[in-house]
Image (tube, rainbow, N blue to C red; front, side, top):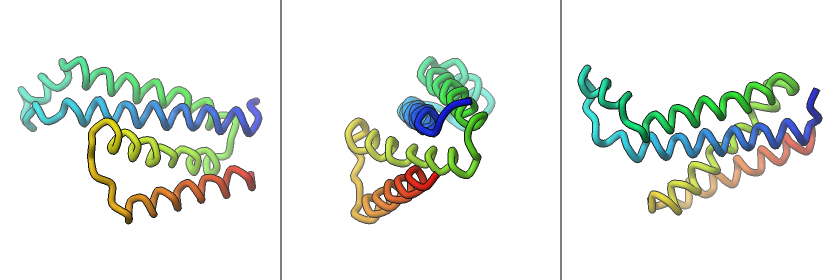
Length: 119
């Protein structure tokens, strides 16, 4: 049985890996069409497969966190994925971040802290 800190760490690792997987999938999906040959090509693409592999790896960490923690707690901490995606979007993909998104992300951070410190 893991303690609370281990559960939080596993969940945050899972969220970071999941966010990284989204980057790989987003960065390579524009090359494909939504048809049978496009889907087959998509499944042969190393970057898409890397993203799917990362997502599966993140799911393994998430499952271990779920095994020891309450679903409502673990899932709330997993919302840190939004934070990692925002950072990847801004710093790696050079996407613009609106004030509204920053405010929303700040609220997510606040919610995670409230849940983490009251568990």
